[in-house]
Length: 344
Ligand SMILES: [Zn+2]
Image 1 (cartoon, rainbow, N blue to C red):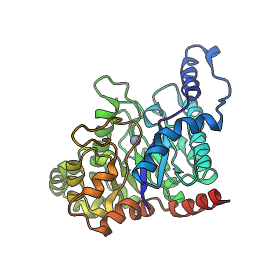
Image 2 (cartoon, protein in one colour):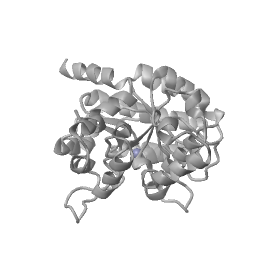
Image 3 (spheres, rainbow, N blue to C red):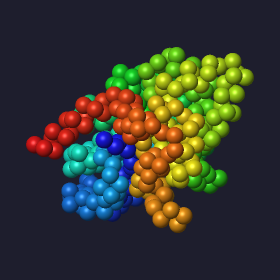
């Protein structure tokens, strides 16, 4: 089985986008508040079929761990009450999609974070998504300010209530920022990758995983700049009298394969142990086009893993399937549950 651990719902029907537009407009003018969201199953299918589903079929991947569009989480927009309302709408939409296509998608939730608001406020929605909707993980934003980095580092006790709940529920988090409102950063081109790199360095300098030995994070986008600078990080850990990286964080931190060219994946698999790499594509959206050098979609990451020199068949099985089942402890049961519901 090929499990894509990083997909977002980026093929929303126009009514969904309009709903959010009205919700944001209502911040200034409450008369613009949206009515109930009305979208038919057919409208959902119509947009999803020629996008995520088409690419799954063409590329021969089986199931995508699917969450709301990350750049639209918009934690910095409005207040905590609005973030809760929007997050519920987004997560409910993922749940509908999972019900429409139980063999193709497994749900992961966005969290109702809000700048300056203790992340403990996310616990009710996390519990709802895991216990009631069957989701297997969450996306955790280390910077709800949208590019101004005002929150304590992920290793601060500020975040501990969420970690306690994640451990209890056996769900990992993907470290994932939303759009940036800081014009110095481009959302997908720098803000995402900066956040991945920043989170790793926070983990390196802390004893978070002594406090939470089973807590797990996926750092997406190939780990930002981390694998490329692995020597720097190993050296810094040594200078700081930290344990070697493998001991310090490789039982808890994983990297995905959302690196959109062969040399990038070759480096990733050479530097990072195969046990810590999860297959992912982040399709559709981050980079939509076709690479003129190869004639293939940039985000067709299965080709790069298939083509990576030095990966044994066993390593590939881990990257495509085994590691995801390990990092998302609820995944295996949820796949069985959804497969049998699809048959029924
Ligand atoms: Zn993403």
